[in-house]
Image (cartoon, rainbow, N blue to C red; front, side, top):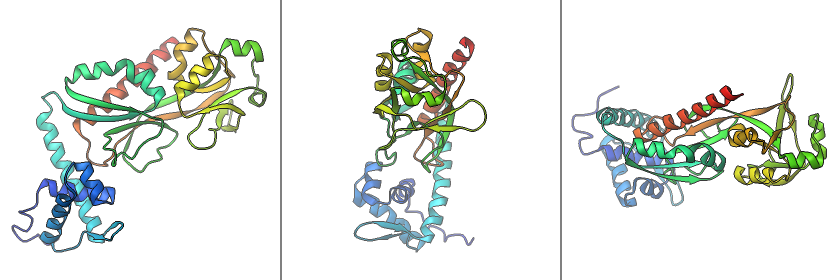
Length: 312
């Protein structure tokens, strides 16, 4: 590759590169400006500065949207590498200091209440210079638009193309309150679920199928759900009150099972587990604060799973 003439990018800055990357990832100058907390005119000037310096158009602008040119796509990849090296160098320099700044996190209700909530004070105590904003939601928002640093999700496979880390596998169990079993009996086979009241999670307009197996392949059971919700805590409370049979993450109901408030249903069948993922908005740029939170979350999940294995 022919080197650029000396001084060609002297007027550009790290901020210029960040502005261009943000424009590419948000497909909008105004969205990039909100993400970087700059004026839209400032973002535009930084991108124009880069285009003038290297003598090629990086983005095409129309009244409704932008599109990245071929040269822009190549330059974007280079920018990611440059910014990753800069951030990595900065991370090394501050590694000996306490983390500071602000962190925005999203987590589903069951995870937030059962795992994150009881331990979050430990993370805050370890990093007194760091503040954290936790959004509790079953839906994963637009991480770039909403300036989210990390989203915790529970899925079989990641649905987003954004960078993600697998924290752990999350087993699931079918269970019901003793009062429900006393009134309606205990199913012996999955087909018996058709005669029972079931409470199910949903992540669309349809109820989530229950994936079960005893031997061999997974079988999908579309149970008759009298209660649907995208909120696991609501479903757990309904299950405790005897409203029906539920399919829960084990971490969410293990305390209830241990206390006898819930009991296993179809214990000889395995309910298909999901994975716990940490999703971040950038492929190559991981803020030190984000990395610390991911490691903390991975640790509390591992401790919970270890204690469950010891007890059972």
